[in-house]
Amino acid sequence: MKSRQEPLLRGKLKGYGYRITQGREAIMNVLADAKEHLSAEDIYIKVYASYPAIGLTSVYRTLEVLVSTGLVYKFDFGDGRARYEIAEGRRGEAHHHHLVCTGCGRVIDYADFINEELALLKKTEAGLSKKYNFTIINHLIQFYGFCSKCKTNKNAK
Amino acid sequence: MKSRQEPLLRGKLKGYGYRITQGREAIMNVLADAKEHLSAEDIYIKVYASYPAIGLTSVYRTLEVLVSTGLVYKFDFGDGRARYEIAEGRRGEAHHHHLVCTGCGRVIDYADFINEELALLKKTEAGLSKKYNFTIINHLIQFYGFCSKCKTNKNAK
DNA sequence: ATTGTTAATGGATGTCATTTTCATTTACTC
DNA sequence: GAGTAAATGAAAATGACATCCATTAACAAT
Image (cartoon, rainbow over all chains, first blue to last red; front, side, top):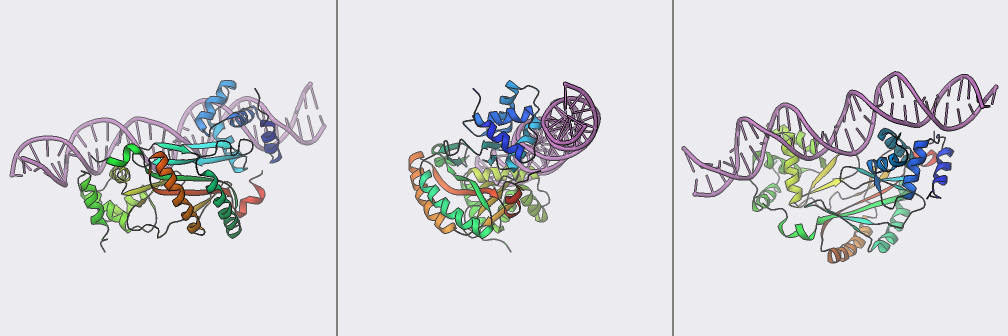
């Protein structure tokens, strides 16, 4: 099933003066249908399935274009690979933050308390936007600490 | 001037069963005296000045130990290199969050609104700790968007 | 529809932070 | 002071991502 999202991205990309290529269309489709944030390689693999002529290099380049135009968000969760998520459409749906265990590296997604957080973030955003003349579009919140397994021993030898 | 911080770390590391080596002492000194969060290479260079026998490998290994025991925090700001900060001692002093420009990659540090944020974070932390049996020690908050230079053109071609 | 131009591509190669390997050294126990 | 296992440094490996460059394809103008 084709996503109804893609033509939107397509039009916007074109509006910024970029050409619409087969590879870029395939990448936008994958992003529009994604339920999770994907790594560049995740995207490459998914695109490859329907368009094997794709190169990993083009995935990186297209993502860079999409991110720099604001059509796609890029996150760094600290595991050494960036993740990408489409900006319009799927917003809020699976929005969550992370608990990152300092002991074992485990990452727990949570969506609890998100609403209270969001309320505060809105206020903060307003102040920051004004002071720094910065348009805020998204955010990343991570808590670091120790998960249940690691909290007792703290990796003692 | 020797930091009074280091013996603390030293004792704790020992308590976890790790040996205290010259390299580890030097690294702990650097971390205890640091005013900013440092990258592994930053630390290597500083340690090298007083202890040239140090190897970059040992810096990475020692940092891993310190992080996994909770004595040092590790952050990933998304610029491809991790940053480290001592857990006890210098807390709060230069605590800030980031505005990351999606257009050009610029990172703006801000410390405004931190207090309101912290109040909420404390509440959130309490809830999360309980629900996920996770001991929260630190956090990372980043806003993504467009800085003043990038907001108008969004890198259009 | 055909052509010209220039952006976009893919494969190879490079880069850079971090990890692994391994033979040697050293902190700490007895 | 000797024994032993942890820790080390140098070199090589890894893995994500960027760059180079010759080729291809999008799209505007015909």
